[in-house]
Amino acid sequence: MSKKKTIPPSVAFDMYYASIYGPRWEGLKDSLLKNSENKVKIEGLKIDYYVDRASYIAALSLGAARGMNVLDMCAAPGGKSLIIAKSLQKSGMLTSNDISKDRRLKMLSTFNEALDEEERKLIRVTPFDASKYGIYHKKEYDRILLDAPCSSEAHVLKSKSHLDSWSLSRTKRLSMNQFALLSSALLSIKDGGRILYSTCSISPLENQCVIEKAIKRHGKNLREIELELDGFERLQLGYIALPDRSDMGPMYICLLEYNNEN
Image (cartoon, rainbow, N blue to C red; front, side, top):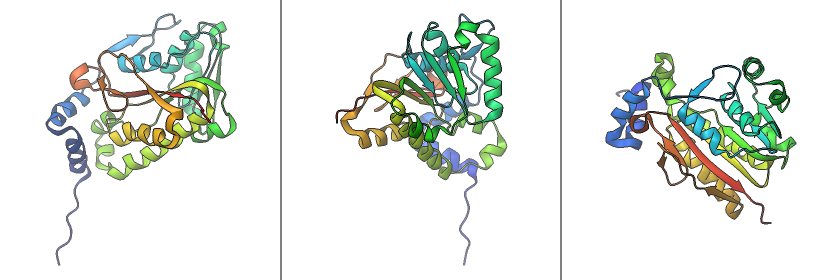
């Protein structure tokens, strides 16, 4: 009796993303292997700090403004928090949360180097499990940025060890965790507040599917806000920037507004 052949993870990876992107996949894969040079300098800081243009657009799309109470749920390394801090114009509050102690310490160091004292006083850094954040901080925030941990296929492709350990079950597990994080954010957002969900994944399971599941669960209380974004492709839910066509990203974003009609 012959043994069933096991497909190598790298081959399974190619097969999965080719099934999603079709003939586009090979060109997209090549672009993911290149390091993005489309960087934006965050203006008004004490140091030079650059982020990928897609990340910069994502942070601005949250719509944080003067006087708001904002949460960055998975904030490290802190680039998006810096953009939000500048958007607050020295009035309001920003909570930058990350569960990793090492990442928090590096983020704190970045904040101290980049921001003046008045801006730094607006930021508190917290160490919580973001998937449980909403249990303890209900309806507190005007805006929430959820840049969710994801498959990060661009990094997987550049690392033989990561590619050799890839499996479809991982992106499925991440999708479940991302939904838990978004559910937590929905507990923490004020009525009428907005959540910007983002990932650097190119898997629909971690992007549109997470948003679709949340909208189905919350019904008319949750709706997508349309955006005008240069370099992003419109999806059924949300937008994605892919480096084969926009020279930035990958970055998926979806802006949601929550209103409790009950």
